[in-house]
Image (cartoon, rainbow, N blue to C red; front, side, top):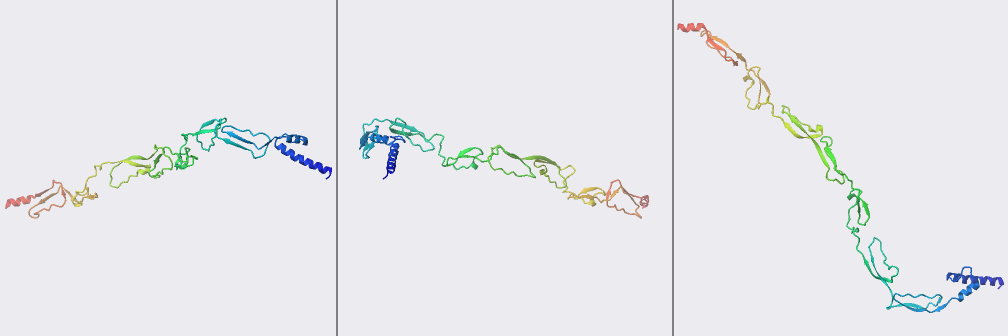
Length: 294
């Protein structure tokens, strides 16, 4: 083996030793072989270390080499330790409870009650549409929800009897003060011979009151009328039992004047018709003379 090969071999071995000693914190990364040798020689051979540790105590493992067969074990009783009684409040996240600094362990853990602002929401079945708009709830999983139900407040609607007689109540919340109404009007009507129909819808309203006036004085009950045209003075008008106008045909004789003489005219037939009561039927002088001669 040449000299250069020997030097390379030694350098390789040095580097291996240096790397391990640097890892153990015993030398710097630039230490030469003599520093490495010193560091190795200073390592204490602890061999097999056995120790017992009581509760609340600790054991410091000495620096140096250990054979790997030593045992450190704990024994009960006689320890000097301080335990902590700790309280925690439940949270939405899991908690790992450990003793504070200066305490060996926990003598007890008190878990407080679920805070008042936390409730069992597993039975919640309301959805956003079931809740007034912008009002918030939590669902069965605890997720915060904002309501979407429309707030209609107090609806004020006037129905139009003719053009818009119905109103569809909109979906959503109503505060109980809303009113749906119709306009009303009043009317007065006088009976006529023709049938009358009152159209209140012409003003988009309905009749609250309709006043029917009495039958006019000129109108009377004609069901008892029995006179016919021939029984009514000519030119005079009556109505029959149907209310139809009837013009009389009875002749108006006025004051009739007639004579009979007993000879050529022995009788007088009173003509059909109306007589005013002033007419006369009289005997002539000839009749009087004839009677006197008998």
